[in-house]
Length: 222
Length: 149
Image: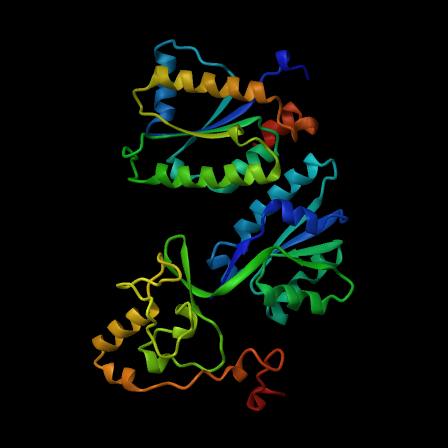
């Protein structure tokens, strides 16, 4: 899932300054699961904004709404009336959700209420870890299902580096060395031979090149 | 409102298994504590959602006291520890908003601590009295507060 974190209240207050009526719009998918932008967070952040604005003697009129997915037209339509009757929208969706709303309501300011962080998973209660960089050319099959692009601090395709200490990364000693994990994993599944192969430098043309990416599936188009 | 005439209104979320019983015990022992608190009994402080603290303050409470079992003594093992983390989260958010975080406080008592609970309540009331009325509370009315809380 996409993992995000809330922005601090002073920053949000700056963002919405100049507006009187705002819609705080939550998203019921990824950001609900990562406890950043679901119905509960909409309630808490709206309360916080109401309190902060009252302290500045510019009380905000805040409407709260959470739709199932902010990145899907079918659900975005359900928020149409609420979006129209407010001056601006603070989206607690991920970056995709914010842009989806903004592009569909040309005359309406839409602001991000969260900082979208990464694609990751919940490792323990309250701890989310990044797992995927969305590089567009997956190499997980080569590395026992552990991504060196995302989880090695140096993004080494032929690791480990000389800074690997036991199972720790030299860049962030509180992080595990991805290459140690890859070694252990490949050993466990009997595929250590894969490490004998020298992998050429990663081709980043599938990711950080040529602007934003678009996937077209002709078989699904109508 | 002058500070000397200000009587804080404090919402106390009390765990059924400890603080609520110790408040009862304080009553049985004829121990007086300030009448400024409004006790809400909860099955465990771990039941409390972070929204409750926000809504209480937003709706005009001058302070919020969360009273759970002694650490290690929770009837549901670790509900009070969950509550402690949630209270700390909202205390930080209150600081972001510009509200003194001392308006929200978590304490731990056992069911046998009638006297200490009375002291804790007195301390909380005095702390909030010094802080003054809830800065959001100008529009507050007695009936509105009672209804909304």
